[in-house]
Image (cartoon, rainbow, N blue to C red):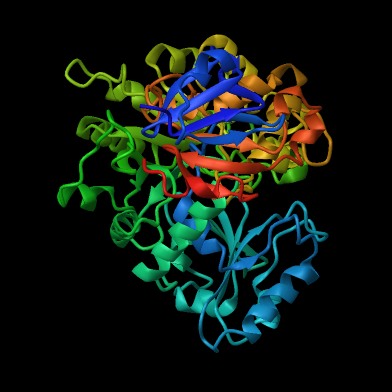
Length: 553
């Protein structure tokens, strides 16, 4: 039987070990052959469809190993306050006021993505400023990191927050000169978020599809939702299942349940949901419920990541916020570990990483060893040599976001000093030591666009051109490896995808240029032209493979 598809006319990146090939054949949703043109051409027949790369490059489809797909999709309908477009307080208030004019009085206005470090005022907006922009609406706008938000007076009133409201465990409500500023940090944000009406199932399925189509247009065939249950509770599980059943789920999804006390992991367990860690998402089932997430700290940009050494006094000082005391964190990690879940735990500062790593080690037991479980420390931005060695010993995986260097690197210098910023997210060190760092963006914290992320792995440059830790740069091949194979490995799927070798799922992206032979700066203007999942077209920018749209997984 001849191949369904033949790709020729440019280089094909098989993976870090396999290097490059001249041709690739797809049959039944999997790679049938890859190698020289002469070796692969024999797979073609009269019915074989063909893609001519025309000097472009094909490579394994990208894997977004740490993002929040549903929140990203929902955020597409919220007020966009990201720094690419919004760099002044006036622009923030202008956009909030415009949303207020188009929203019935009394309904919520939600904004996402502002960065106080990039605003002209160099501080967070105040509740009273939001009051002037939207006097008849509750407003809540979340900083780009997702760990800090600002509410106006109407929102705080609905949340029942007053001057004497105590800080909840693992969170803080800011007050200055005896007045509420509107700033909520970490778990205190739940006070406001819990009053925002949950999206309907229809809205969530629409958001899942919209997010997935955006990802497909960027070259992704696999993704994650790293905190399922934090927007609408258990209803999110139903929304994902409906999206899959209706053919509206674009990516193979590795689902991570919210495991904090306010999350859904306990209820999901009681209702019979069990981890299917070993298989990962497959051609037949795009959803795999594999992991549970808890939080240890916040963000370095928001001054809430927990460090042993304090932030610079000029940035505000302090050592950040622990979301939970040690024993509470240890108990959660041990419980989810024994239930069989992969632990995907948020920790950015070295003190938080120590808490999480110690908790994972304490969970180790003869009848429930952590070896082979591929527990993950999400972000894992600022760690020391001893912590790296312990992670490697136990097979604990770092899941970093090099895009944090691109978007927040200069703020790290401001908050932590140059020396600590230089060693953040040490990609080359991890690879050299034998770790498998799964590159990702944490979208909607950062833009989901993979090309700045790849560029930063190759150059260690911030968006302002600052070079932080040049000794941690990767080759393009290594960067793509981290964005493909390492992500698959973190989801127990490296035997199915992440490389383009015979027998692997035909998850393929065609880029607009050969980034492996281009100047680093050209990566930033590269685009995905074609994305296939199991040989099926998810995205076709130029219409060149429209005939493939009916191919099956």
